[in-house]
Amino acid sequence: MKAYSINPQSKEVKELDLDIQVNTVYTFFNSISADETLILDKHTIYSDSDAISKAKKAFFIGDQLIVGEALVLGKDGFLDIEATIPIADLKSLVNYEVPEFYEKALDILKTSEINLYKIFDVDDKQLDSSWVLHVFSIADENTQAYFINQLQKAMDAKDDISAFMKKMAILALNAMA
Image (cartoon, rainbow, N blue to C red; front, side):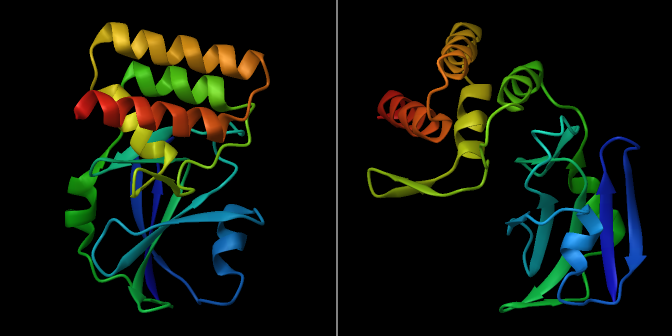
């Protein structure tokens, strides 16, 4: 079955021929935990949930931050199927240039247990930590510095980083209102 792997270290998008089994995704990452991102129509992007703690390189597919290698499969309901996006189209969506703000934040987060894609509710909106990072990445330099400083303080204090991200999401939403 046609799938794609994206390696931010080598900056390569490769076509793979996989025999999909129950444990294919976990075997690909050599991990027991994987994240699913549904940003491509009729496709799932899988990534290693432990990529941040392993200090893997980050990249973007469209505006979505992905950390570490990614596996792209087609999606039909709940089933993984052959990828149908042309490789040239996928390559055009991949951006390996990660702004310094993200690099600093991910470096601080590498000792946390954060999952960037775990959904939390704020004011009837379902958000995640990747959204929080995105919003602060487009803020002015002082706001970015504030976020990084507060994140470092939260890590030093061994605070719940998921609660910190939710608090920052509330601040971001209030600033947008």
